[in-house]
Amino acid sequence: MLQWLQGVDEDTWMILLVLLAIIVGLLLTYLIRIHIAYRMAKNRHRDPLGWVLLSFFFSPFWTWIILLCIGDDVSAKGQR
Image 1 (tube, helix red, strand yellow):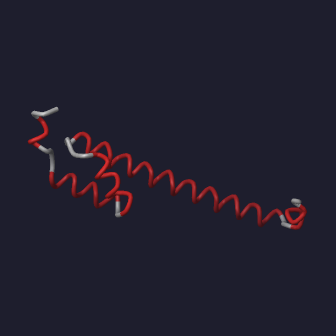
Image 2: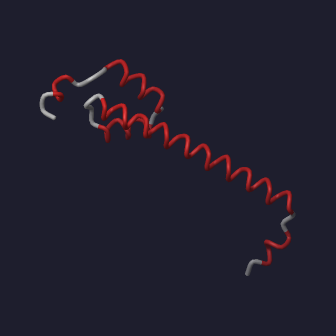
């Protein structure tokens, strides 16, 4: 069943392994950036889910800038 794997040389496996490592590294970096947007929204008394979705579909960097510009939700401070 896996006979086709025997014909693949060592250099090809090394390239595939490096590509896999790059993809995993980029994915972890992106997830960390989304987590930062979550923490920023939560600390500013904003809806974290909405801001995470915004940072997922758009840029987490722009989400951070928007959260920094709009600041705390003063109406929610008294309710929580």
